[in-house]
Length: 154
Image (cartoon, rainbow, N blue to C red; front, side):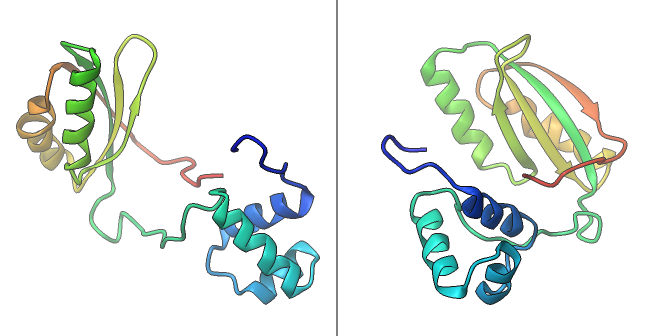
């Protein structure tokens, strides 16, 4: 939250909670769900968007139906962790469509990647041809997910 921005009240939090689960909900239904009339709900919704609490709306896709249900988490250690190396790695990661998430980590390794592919053979190819070739990669360690127990955001 930006300095000087108003705190979220109970209605704002309910709006965010409802939208996190049902992003395409019409404003009239959203208003009913949070206990406000349509106009105040629209005003609050616009403010939440403007202030950056709501960053956008998107479709939640089914990875299995799209043939992308193999998930591997990859620990990455870099050979160089100076700012230029981190920037080069970050830029390269952004260009790899199989990398669904990338987090800079404080701990025993530098980055944690969530990589989504069709199967273990495709993952092995991506690891050998792409991930290992990213700038400054010194070591990777892969953990294959057996089941997604929870993947919803908030």
